[in-house]
Every structure is written in C-alpha cells, then in structure tokens.
Length: 407
Image (cartoon, rainbow, N blue to C red; front, side, top):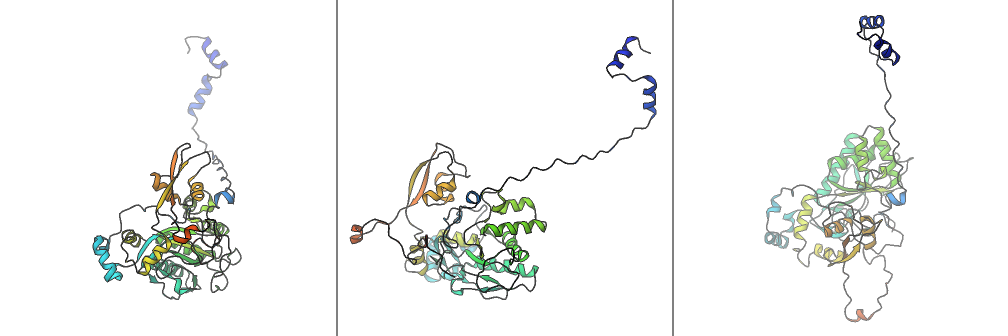
C-alpha cells in the first residue's frame, strides 16, 4: 500500500487523496461529459452618436448644395492606373490641334474642380421612360456621368418594374461653369436626383419623410450607385440617412459596410453618404469620371481662349494663383476646422503638406493654400476696399446669407 502510513491521512486532510474503494469505483464508472451552454458576453452598447453640430455640421450652407466645399470638392486621386483609352495616348500638341479643329473627337472632358470648372463636349441627359427632367437645359454632363446615371435608374426599374419616373434636376450647364444656385455642378459630374415616394411622384422635388418616402426604391437607387457606378460622394439629409440605414439593416445588408458608407452611423469620418443642408428633397450624386477627368487635367491649359468652355473656366477662376498661410497646429485643430477657417479643402491642405492621412501634430506648422484675389485696376483701385454686398447673380458664393432661389 503506502510506504509511509501517515501520507494518506495528510493527503486526505488537504483534499488530495481518494480512498481506494472510491477510486476503484470511479475508475470503473463511465466518464460522462456534460455540455454546458454559456451565453456569449453581451456586446457593448454602440457609442452614442455625436451631436449633430459636431458629426454632421461640416456641410451646411444657405443653398441646397452650396456647402463649404470641405468634403464636397474632393480631388483625392483615385487609386489605380489611368483608364485605357486611345485618346490618352495623344501628345499635348495633338490634343491642342484636336481642340481647335475637331474637339468632339476627344469625347467628354471634365475640366477643373466641381466647384470651379468647365465641361467640354458634354452630353445632354436624354428623355426616358424611367425619369423626368425638371430642367433639360441644365442637364448636361460627361458621357460617363450620363451613362452611369441611366444605368443606376434602370437598375431600380429592373428590381421594381413599373416604378414611377424619378425626377432628375440639375447636372451642369452645356459648357459647365457656375450654375445658380449651386456652388458645385460646374464640371459635368454632379447630379441632383429626386427620391422615390409612396405617393405619386411630384414634378420637381418635394420634402421627403417617413410618411411618404419609398425606402425600397430609394435604397435600390443608392445601392446601385455605390455598387455599379464610380461615386465620390452622395449627399443626403441626416433624417433620411437614418431611415435608409435602418431599412438597409432590415433587408440584411452587411452592418460593417453600412458603417463604412453612412455618415449618420458615426463610424467613418470619410463616409461616402454625407449630410448636406438642403438635401431633404433630393439626393446629390457626384460621379468620378476617370477618362473625362484625366483629359480635363491635360486640357486645362490647352483650351482655345475664345471657346465657351474656356470662358466658363475663366469665370470659375479655376486657374487662380495660390498663396500659402502658415498655421501652427494647436490642440483641437483638425483638417475640417482648418479647411473651413481658411476657405479651402481638406485635399488641398493634404496636397500642400504631403499628408497621406487626416492626422495633425500639435506644434507643427502647416502650409494652408489660399486663392489670390485679383487686384482692381485703374479707377477701381481708388475705390473703398470695404466688402460690398453681392447680388444673387454675381458669382458662385453670392447666395451666402440669402435664401435659396425657388426651383
């Protein structure tokens, strides 16, 4: 048995020993493994959405999409090689010659920024069974924009046959440039599209709410734009974003994807679907046009001086000179704050400082690009330099502080 008689007693005292009889019975008994279901730990409650003023207030202005251009005028380069097109193999001299003799042979060209640009060889949105044009003379876009928009609306009607025609508002003027009452819509890539309604669609835009909005069709429109087209931004009012996001969840859309695309869900500071004041009656899609934009980059300084597009470009001041302010980052500074303070964009600040992210370091001095205003000449130089109140027709920024014109 045991060589030391006291050992079993000591082990038993500390609960380590098993009496021989019980040990034998345990050895003979079958081993039963009990399965215990442990409920998973409760997932943490989602963080409270930031106040509207902080999370969604960066796009507001007094006209429907005259936002401060902080997020609205993205020039962030799109990853990947330029699109393959025989046109892009032409030299600058060949492009200049075509612009003079046969500009249509180059196809659509989106020159400059959406808030300061022009449109060359635009295509007018055709009439169709699935949409109504509220202002055909202001429905000019690049070929890529028109084809993308047509495809997106057709996808809605494939999913929901017999849908009422959706309303299409402004895209751009025929040659681009300033289009009242907008700040953007200048380069053939911005489109105002009405929501789908449960009731009869109005001619023009109407306020959308939970009582009249057709969420299935409106979500089908937004989803097709995101999945099938090349989109930079979609501007939608906050309240409508909430309803759309909830509907998307209810039909089984991936929650992580919805967190990524909806600003209202508070998970992505650079989400594609963003709030902008005035978009409770329609949504605003900005398409990315790889071909038209690359041609625009090459053609910006080659346009014939007297062409309508060159005139639109000059009036937009897209080629204005740039100066730089020096700003030492302080606690609380962000690219959004600096862009609004200095009247520029996040992307321009990033480009001027070689930034690849939106992070700022406290104490570092950053270069902030600013446009140089033209100096008055002759008698105008002697006039008072006090700011003058501008009329509604005086330029893209004229509508600040004034009510938006009725559409």
